[in-house]
Picture 1: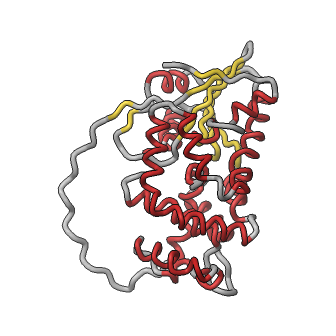
Picture 2: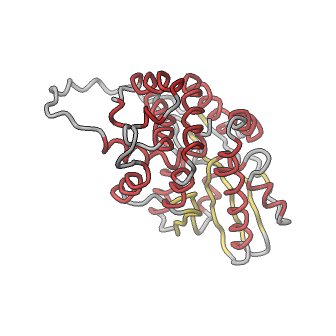
Amino acid sequence: MIRKFLLPLLGLAIAGAASAQTAPTQTAPAPAAPAPAAAPATVDADPALWVVRDKDTTIYLFGTIHVLKPGLSWFDEAVKKAFDTSDALVLEMVMPEPESMKGLVMSKGFTADGPTLTERLPEADRPVYLKALSDLGIPPVAFDRARPWLVATNLTLMPLMKGGYAAEQGPEQVLTAAAKQENKQLLGLETPEQQIGYLADMPEPLQIKFLEATLKDLPDADRQMTAMVDAWSTGQPDKLAAIMNDSMKETPELGKLLLTDRNARWAQWIRQRLARPGTVFVAVGAGHLAGAGSVQDQLGKLGIKATRIEY
């Protein structure tokens, strides 16, 4: 449902959850490596790109899908030109070191005592929850001490990874590597602590509601993700917004927390950045740049116009 907002966080969630699982004392011999698969055919993608300008400042706004399958060619044409001319790359969050990420998730995503997560769920949700874990090969004990937000984020990402999506294919990692190679300044609109805090600080009833909505969405996860990637890769933010808005109807509190409130803060950041000269490439989840309440809408309230770059 809200997987587009959550995907920046899920690497942290997976790291924390994996550490809670007990490793077997013995392992079977590794099977012979399969023959390498043929590389997928490359498909041209033209994601939407906007620009905000004044007399001495240029700020590009690029929407991302945080995990992708191999084979989409998006870092070219107008996107590459905008990036190459920028002095800095601005992301939702600059990823910390793996051990730091893992420690953050462990501290915010697990409890030391009290009822297990299964026991804390409403009885009607328990069979669905246990089946979802079973389908993914996860023993329930792995999440016994996990908080609902952490399990919801894991259950959002894991089916996608099984289906071939990968964070290393996502624009954040590609752009970060390019920025480091070219010695560009790398900035984050938020800290890891802030991003995890949006979910970890939710009251438990809202976390349970989030997990319930995630469980309900699981059977349709692949179709929804395919539709979102299609809308993104063909530069159709209105189509992407329609998919997202439909999926947020049941949990408007999460939409406000994870989307519109953050968009308003980012618009203020852009307004302040326009006061200094230079060229900046801002890359955030594509849903933040789509539909009502988007970053562009919030900029409009500040009297700032974002113009779509056609290519």
